[in-house]
Structure formats: structure tokens, C-alpha cells
Length: 175
Image 1 (cartoon, one colour):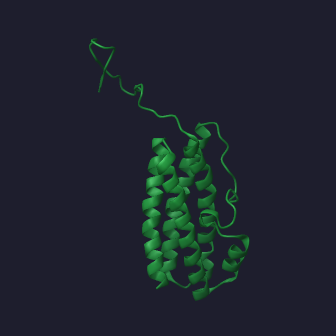
Image 2: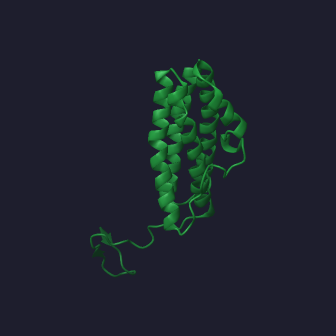
Image 3: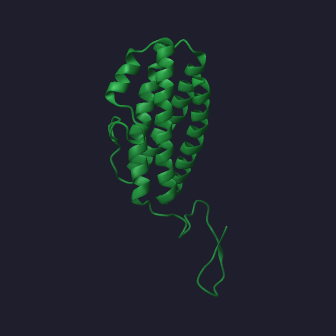
């Protein structure tokens, strides 16, 4: 890559691994809010998917839950590493949002899900997870509207697209 120098001066070839000036954008509050909110949001989704194996008889529900776990665990790690790199604490648990905010399930809803089995579990799981994913898509949309950090913007695009596809699948399963 050719690196320009001052006006009228010749350019030079960048050295391997050299960071070029002006390429990085400092994170803004929206970037941090997205990571700090999405980590606990994903954790609740993982808590819900962990209930599936013992409570469903549906291979389709197992597949949905497996896909959610497969994507959200690495996203939690990536956002946690990003926050740590900024010197920020990684949120614990899944209590960053009030119940209902961004589709978060309340304790009562989680307890109803824990108690359900078979078709009743499947229906409640799908209803709660659709709402949960729609909340994540809202958070991702806010990030894309106000965030500036490239990594968090790419993460938000992945969340928005991937969870939109999963919502469509879950709606089909609901009938």
C-alpha cells in the first residue's frame, strides 16, 4: 500500500503490519452501549436455549436452539474482548435490561418456560425467542444508526441479519 506524505512530497510503501493514520475511528457511546447491552441479552437467549434439550420433543426446536447457541456464544466473546480492550468491565448475568426491554423475558416468563414441556414449551419458547430476537434487532438498528466502531457495526449487521432470518424460521414453526 502506498502511504501519502505531505502535499507535494512523494509517497512511500507501507511496512508489513504498519497501522495507517486516519483509518481507525474511536468508539463512541453507542458502540459501548451496544456491546454492554448485547452481552447480557445474548446470555438470556443462551439460558433459554439451554432449557430446550430436556423440555422439547421437536427436532426443529433443537435445531433452532443449537443455531442460537452456536452464533451467540462467540459473539459474547468478541464483544467481551472488545470491551476489555477499551478498559471497560464486561457485564455479568443478563440483568442489564428491564424485563420486556428489548424483548427480554421476565423472571415469571422464564419460570413458565422452565415449567413447560412438549408442545407447550415449544410454543412459549418460540414466542419468547421471537420477541427476544426482535429486541436484539432493535438494538442492532440503534447501533447502526449511531455507532462508529467498525467491529461493533459489523457485529450489529450480523445480529440484525442473522436474527431476522431466525425470526422468520421460528414464525414458520409457530404456524
